[in-house]
Image 1 (cartoon, rainbow, N blue to C red):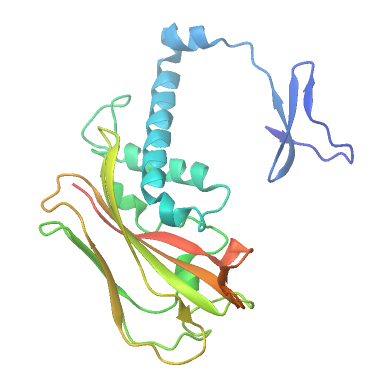
Image 2: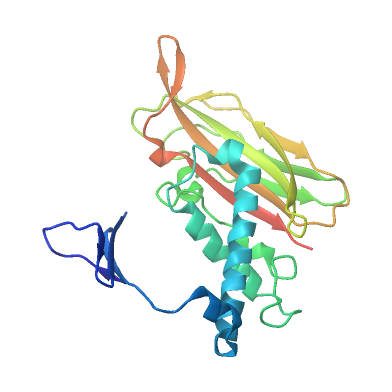
Length: 252
């Protein structure tokens, strides 16, 4: 894959070259004469098929997790979250030490590798919510919880955009059955809290998932910013500072 450096921006096809636009600029890709049928049947491409299968599994698993978190991820994700999450899911699958290449899967991999995944690379939770909080997943009871201490919501605790007057925390507990492509997702949000430098009392956010689950469990935490207006608080048009991350994973 090459990048166009010319002042002339080309989109389309010229001969065996395809020109297209991405966030990184205008790119060039060379067409291949290799057919899908040959890749699917030729023994020489067995490794290629295994790699394609792994990428397909990673993409499907990433979509399932994104769908589960969609209610709080829609305003807290960047445009590349799909590819970034698929890449991380590929690492999860590669960590499967039970099955041979071509049979590896998410469930037998290391779902804990998703801990710390940021849905917005431009506005990371780790650098936005600077407060030290506690998180827990109780697999036996199904309780998923985040505890926040008393803190002053100033720029030492929250890296907020200049226009923001309020913030809101969102948390989710998710049980994912990757084999059946099913999930249970529960959500809890704080009130819209004022960024006025006055101390907030300690509080917690918790949800209940099915007890004694046999599937991976995920805890996600996010923050969203608002601006006060005459008819109520409005979400900031610039969502670059909104953040969401998977802060804890309980694998099986």
